[in-house]
Image (cartoon, rainbow, N blue to C red; front, side, top):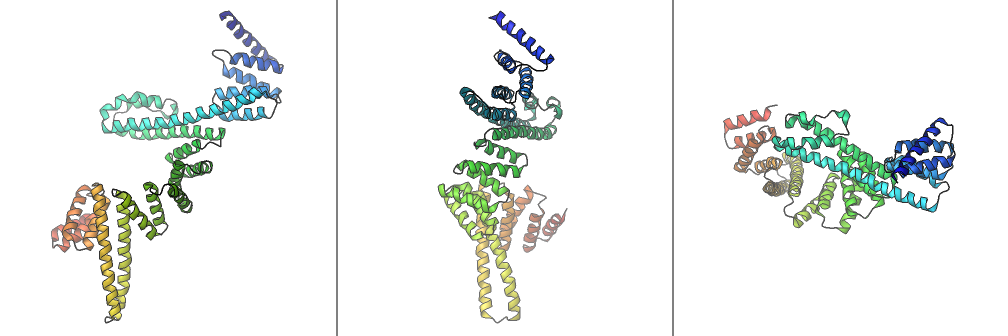
Length: 436
């Protein structure tokens, strides 16, 4: 058997060399030479490709030549060329088993192409993990340098120098660049999978995700639209499609999708929150407030809900303030108008009520997340407007210790100090509020 194998190789070389010198071989010679080479343990695929690409120019109406060419393209992972060759083969005369094999090859190529996309995306996760560990403890970086070198080996033009970096700061930019290159390769594979089989939604979902990671929101939206068309009842597709619609400000479509999800899962907290934010953005504040109230009932620990709801309460205080200004102007003209006085008192009480609700929600938000400095600033603002000066000073002093450059917080603190008669502290706070 060893001798026979050697003879076959030599015969193939002779035939191909003869072919290169001749103008044209019979079609059977092209096909038999290709088949013999493909049966070898280590075929020379480039040689076979050259042979079959020459054959198709002489015999473009031979289905088997196109079939063999498609097989080699699949092995060389050239999915677009493979599909084009198979499409041509299927238009011509083929055996039933060859037609069946084409379907199987396309299916297997889709799987391998899709999985390559997944592998590239997983490499990004590796890189993020390596970087995070190195940033937190630079002494551990030497453990990851070889792996980073391996993950970036196919991007030779990028000139990575993982073993030469001396600090976490030095790897920050190369890490982001490598992530983008890996995501780009991942997207290439997903797009090839879409081309191979446009009826499977998985490549569109993953392609949309990767597109969003490399700053291609329009492409992400396009692919999620396709995934939704293919799988309109899949909850994961719907949820991710909703997120992309929101980020692309496609509010009307986003509202339709959110309603569809909630019809099947009425207590989905993430979708309820997204819909509330969506309605708020669209100016439908009362509906948004109703949803925030529902979410708090379902999950009392939804810190972002407390923050958003508190902001809606503050919007109400601003609305009332505008009405009070208008009433004040009317009262100046007619100070004895009892109805205007009563209306003014009523509005002041409503405003106090909304400030109290906002205060409670901001305090809850801070309780759930002590590092929520934005809530601390707004809480100080609420205290000031309710004349709770000691509370305002306490929370704003704590905030300015955490964020010494927070000029707005210093401004509120200056007002609080002034109300308490703490003149020097008020001046100092005002100075810091004015610093660039």
